[in-house]
Amino acid sequence: MTQHDQLTFQNPVDRYAQISPPKQDQPEPGFDEEIVPKADHGEESYRGTGRLEGRKALITGADSGIGAAVAIAFAREGADVALNYLPVEEEDAQHIIEVIRETGRKVIALPGDVRDQEFCSQLVEDAARELGGLDALVNNAGKQEISEDLTELSDEQMRSTYETNVYAMFRITKAALKHLPAGSTIVNTSSIQAYNPNPMLIDYASTKSAMNNFSKGMGQQLAPKGIRVNAVAPGPIWTPIQPSDGQPKEKLPHFGQNTPLGRAGQPAEVAPAFVFLTSPESSYVVGETLHVNGGTPTP
Figure 1 (cartoon, one colour):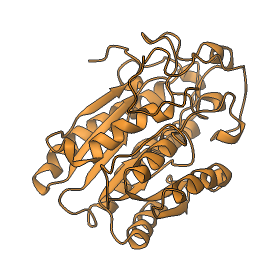
Figure 2: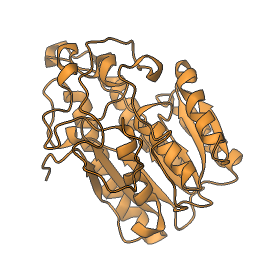
Figure 3: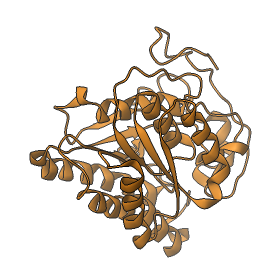
Figure 4: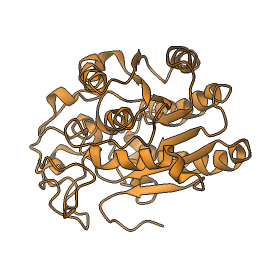
């Protein structure tokens, strides 16, 4: 991987080498410690410029992948952050926490399962209390598991996917509203699957469409209050969700190579979109879905 940061002039085709991940299998939810090759969360490659100075952010699914990269980017930009993740992901989370501590910003660990309704409310209250307020929310926690045929898609998987991706977003956003002052932002992690669904990810893809719709509807509802809601729709990004039943094992060696850029993206390449939508420079952007997918056309 190149050590160039996100502000350095470079060719996007070879900013990161084209990866060909070996066939590998992990139990859900997937662990960054075990992923091959390692993903870039911006530990060495993200350089902040003070765009989120003084902000107080809650980020779900922040132990690895896109959530971890967003957490590092927010801290490097001057924000204090509260990180949510599953308790089994503690080892990955501690790595991200250590990186953030080195920035000098405050970081709060709030492990727990966002599928639990009561935990969603408690998560927001704990984040607001520990951070001394809340003015940025990133609903990023997600579940993605392949199912080759609808007849094989269990109610348990379907329910778990919706509880993680959709219900938690509703519940956490609802709980956060009493804390968010004018000028606050909410950014939800959608997906290219909302526009170009993989037939093996029917339940996951449909939740991402729901997240787009939620972002546009809530954007209209909250805009008069000065709270902006937007979404980011990543394409094929190399994270632990892929080898933990997020993709067929035989397809991993070619992951992301069908994009116009010819490679998979890294979490550090998605984080700047969240920074932009959270920063004041996007003050006239509401209900937008920002695509970070390597060039794949979307509506």
